[in-house]
Image (cartoon, rainbow, N blue to C red; front, side, top):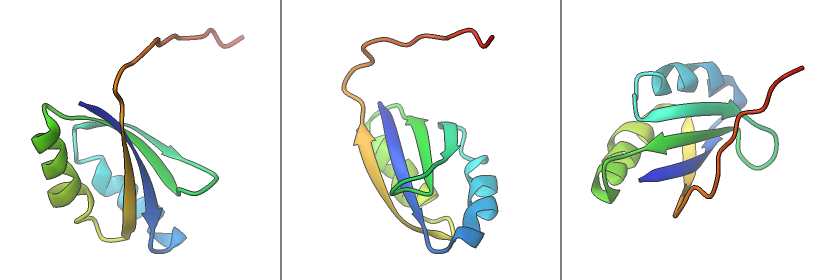
Length: 86
């Protein structure tokens, strides 16, 4: 299961600490500091929905500094590409 998760922080000052703690969760494969609604936007892979629930509830939401999360589960990756940087 692939999901994208928007993360709201309790305060902006928690950013570095939250990112350091998320580095310890190997299922998180991307982490972006973003503008807009979320402070952080991550991509995560799990073995199953049950595994996803475990990662979200027991690992991610247990990190001090995270106020709440919003999860979007990917139903299909339609395409993926790399672009050259000139």
